[in-house]
Amino acid sequence: MELFAERMKVLGTESAFQVGADIAKAEQLGVNVIKFNLGEPDFDTPEFICKSAADSLLTGNTHYCPPAGIIPLRETLAEDVSESRGVEVGPERIVVTPGAKPPIGYSMLTYVNPGDEVIYPSPGFPIYESWVTFVGAKPIPLHLQESKGFSFTAEELAELITPKTKLIIINSPSNPTGGVLSEDKIGEIAAVIKERCHDGVRIYSDEVYERILFDGSKHHSIASVPGMENKTVIVSGHSKSFAMTGWRLGFAVLPTREEAEYFTNLNINIISCTPPFNQIAGVEAYINPESNAAVSHMVKHFEERRDYAVPALNAIDGVTCANPRGAFYVFPNIAGVCENLDIFEQRDKLPAELKNKLSPSKLFQLFLIYHHGVATMDRQSFGSIGTEDMHFLRLSTATDLESIKAGIDRIRQAALDVEGFASFMSKREHFS
Ligand SMILES: Cc1ncc(COP(=O)(O)O)c(C=O)c1O
Image (tube, rainbow, N blue to C red):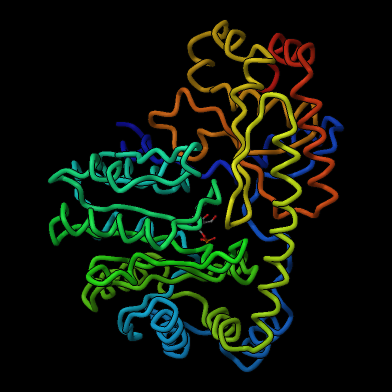
C-alpha cells in the first residue's frame, strides 16, 4: 500500500513561495539577488491597524470566536460591499477566512464534482488550476491574450461554456497581468453567462486587488450587473489593500445564506475560526479615516514604479511589456529573448525528463537568479495547461524604485548574455 493518497499527485502549488529555495541557494553561492518574485506590498501594515490588534490582544481577545467571523467585521464588510458594488449584502452572507486564498478551495469543495468543468484565467493565480485538478474537475483555461491587454472577449468565454461548466473564475485587477476588466466588458461577460449557464453555475469573482488601480481606473464587480449577484461569489481581503499579507484576513460574500453556511462549516472543519484580534484590526482598516491616505500612498508608489518598469522593459531587445492598469505586477513577453539566447534550441537538447520540467521561460528565470541575481516568476507558474508556446515572466513591482531600476538593468544584461546562458545550460547545476 502506498503512503500517499492518489489526490496528492495532482495538487499544484504556488511557486512564488518555492522560488525562495533557489534564491537561498543563489545567495549562499554569493549572488546578490534582487527579488521581484513575491506578490506582497513592500509596505508595512499601517500603525493604527497594528495598534488595534495589539490593544485587542492585551484586553484578552485571545479565544475562539464565531467561525463565520466576528459580527463587527462582517457588518463592516457588508456595508462596504453593499455600497461599493451597489448590491444589498447582509452579514449572514459573509464568511471571514484566513486570507483570500481559502475561498478558492472552499468553492471547489462546495460546488464542483469530479468531472465538472471549471473555467479559469490563464495566466492566473496558480491556486485556481491547482484546486481544479485536486477535486478531479476538468480544467478549462481561458487564455488571456497580450494583444488584448490580457483581457478576453465574451465570445471567447462563450466558446468554453458547456453543460458541464460549474464554476467560472474571473480576477480583476489580475494577478499576474495587472489587466483590469472595464465595466462594459464585465457587462458583456455577464450577458453571456446569463444566456448560457444554468442556475447551478457560480462565478468566482476574485477582487483581492480591488483598491490597487492606476490611471484613475475604477473597480467593477460582476456582482454589480443586474441578475449576477445571486450567481457570484465575491472574494476580497486585507492582504493587498492594506498591506496585511501576514495577518491572513480575507472574506467571501456568498449568493445565499445557505452557501455561507457551507463555507462556515468548512471553516469549522479546517480552521475553526480566523483569529479574532486580526478581525478587530480588519474592522479598523475599513473604518479608520487614515486608511484612505495609507492606501493611496501605496498605490501612488506602485503606479510610479509601473511607469518606470514598463518602458524600461520594452527597451530591452526581445521584450514586449503591456501596461498594467492595476495590481503590482508587470508581465513581460520574453519570446524574443528566448530566440536571442537560443533557449529553444538548447532546451531541445535536454533529456526528456528535464525538458518537460523546464519551459523556456523557466530556464531564463533560473538563469536570471543564478547568473544575474534577479528573482522573477516564469509563465508556467500561472497555469501550465496549454501554455507550451507562451514565454513570459512576472515581476512584482512591490519593491523600491532603486531595486526595480537595478533589477531591470540586470535583466537587460542577461538578455544579451549569450555565452553566459550557454555555460549555464552546459553545467545543468540548478535544474533539480
Ligand atoms: C489573485 C489572488 N487571489 C488570492 C490571493 C490570496 O490572497 P491572500 O494572501 O489574502 O490569501 C492572491 C495572493 O497573491 C492573489 O494574487
